[in-house]
Each structure stands twice: as structure tokens, then as C-alpha cells.
Image 1 (cartoon, helix red, strand yellow):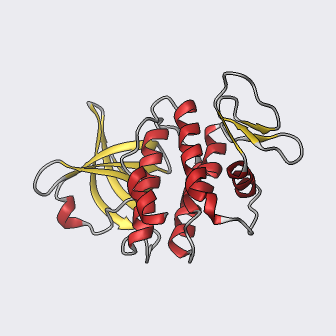
Image 2 (spheres, helix red, strand yellow; image 1 turned 135 degrees about the horizontal axis):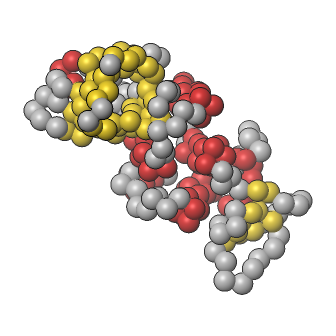
Image 3 (cartoon, helix red, strand yellow; image 1 turned 180 degrees about the vertical axis):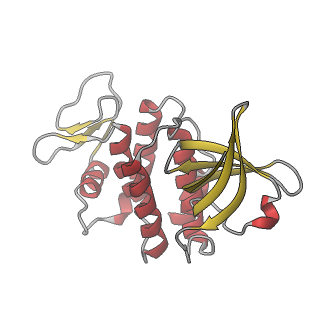
Length: 228
């Protein structure tokens, strides 16, 4: 049966000299994998986080659908060509590929991802974007850090709380990097950038503690090298 729907490209692997197996986060059916025969020649929008409209078929005897066309739904003018933004796109796509495992329809999440990708494409300064994205995305995963009290300085990574209490045996971050993370949560425009690398490390560790399939990231070292 033929369908048409919006989708965000997360991952692609070679299937043959001309064909690909592509993982999309779709607006209608969450995470889906498709075979795109001749995809290397048929489409130019097969880069991480590409916002597309795909024409596809599903099969009753296989979980792998088949794409016949991939058209651009929202034109991204910088992500495919800017080396910094494309590195961030690879990083975000890997994050999504690890965290999004279901075939559920989540329109608010799809809208958030679309808006975030457009923001990445248009922004002049993207040095803090990965940290802000992880914090915003954590809310959709149900693990957004909860800030407690005034001027908290301790981020308990196991409990997901930012407060002034420290419990023996817990894993936590403290000091200026926690203030940096709070400012990002509050969307404070005056953010001291020196702590962005440390904040990214803390949030990656936080995700690893709360997302079972979130282990090593192939893109983490690359993004640190490019941004910091």
C-alpha cells in the first residue's frame, strides 16, 4: 500500500552500489526503516536531519518498508554545507537514533524536532546548541532535570534533580557547570560559554544513566573537536 508522509532522516547505510537502508523518524509512525533502491542516484536530500516528504510502501511480511521517492519538505540551506552545523547534525541524529525506539505517533515531538532543526540551520552562533537541545529533548523523554530551591549548585545525575543537597554514593556534578546548565534550562540569553564543553559531558553522562540503549557515541569526540 502506498503512503506519503513527512520524515526526518537519522541514519543511512549502504545496501548495494546504488541502494540504501535509511532510518527515519516519521510524523505518522515514529521510527521506521526503509529500503531505498537506487537512492544514491535518485535523491540529494539524504543527509542527517534532512526534512523530507517520502513516498513509501509497507509490506505485511517485513518490517522494512520501501521508499520510491524522497522530496525536500523544508529547505535547509546551511546544515548540508556548513562543516560545524553538519557535525552538530550528525551528533543530534545519533542522539535521536539511540533514544527514539518506538513506532508511536508523537506530533508534538515531531514539531519540536522540526523547529530545532530549522533553528540550527538559521542560527549564527550554534556553540551552545547541543547542550540546549539535550535539555529540551530530555523533557520529551521524561527525564528533564528538576530545579529545586534557590541558587542550587548540585546536579544529582541519578535522581535528575538540581538542588543544594548531596547524598553519599550518588553521581553528581557541582559548581559553575551546574549554574551554566540552569541558565540553559531557563533560556537565559547571557550564558558564559567556557562551561559548554563540561556541560555537554555532564548531560551525556546523565543520558547514559537514564536511557538504557544510550552508551557510546561515535560523534561525541568529533563534535568536541569542532566546537570546543
